[in-house]
Length: 447
Image (cartoon, rainbow, N blue to C red; front, side, top):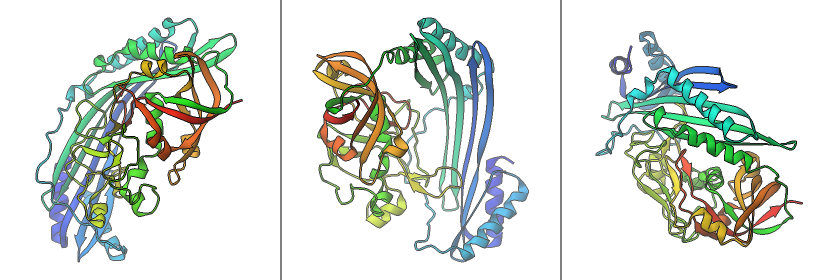
């Protein structure tokens, strides 16, 4: 059965059993990936996953069930399972089915041809990327990971109140991670890029050359003395740090007392140079979406505007509790997960400074390009962090050498307040991004 046939049969049978209202949340994903090593295909992988969750109101109570299969005999199972747990589940607040928003943004064009990309194109792109990386610099001894992949994802939410939301998305990615060696020293570096339309649109040579540059620039690194230094978080490191603390903007975290931003709406919580935006309607980004996991139409939200906290991430439940309008941030980790709260396409609005300008105006300081141990080294409740990192030492406005064996320590909420410059180098490669950020000083532990 296809999903439409399954949904219609499920709702018809549900009405016969006495369900007052019903809803399905369906997800289907497929990915094809080619990995090459030393000029040969190392892995060729096709993965399909997904499933359907059902919830329905029977005898005034909401029941839940889920399945990975869309087969006729599963319909009875879903309805019986949901009816059984509706009798035993107790909830302080009854979930409600949503009839839908008044209108929805236009869906971006789905590149159906991307899913039909022949394997030979993926293979040749991966091989070309490996060849280019190995030929770019004699110090590159191996492309440790070199892959090209395509994936597509489909989401459908339908209920008996009239909600009908459907989207299909596709994405091609190229990633290479290389090893460089010189005089007994070994370092690594990687780069990746994407396209929403075709593998051919990705500049494979550019991805390879940037991975090589990332690796060889780390050679001859050593530590620095412990002290407080001016710090530039390059765009990728800035995005890493922001991603580790996104939960502090969640209304769920605020309500549970897990965020220091509780009660600070309308207050200055960051430098006036910081504007934090979640824009799922932006074109040509990997994390766009026109509706959230509850079927609410998405929109552009300014979380922080010129340093002032304007809103939290809200789904319909947290919005009702706070007495505000939902910001359409309902999320589900998978088809059978509970409704939560999360961002779509979150980013710090770019400034006007180039990274080169930030470096040029730094007399003695550090540019951090990679943060390590984010899971163990960050505390979202307090905002404190202590993270091993890699970067480059700056003297008299120039990058002098690579730096390793150092730890950067600070507090995320203080970092927001202390940003002096915001770069113009915003690069969308995921769902949470940032341009480069410059701070007057942070604690660096080295030798």
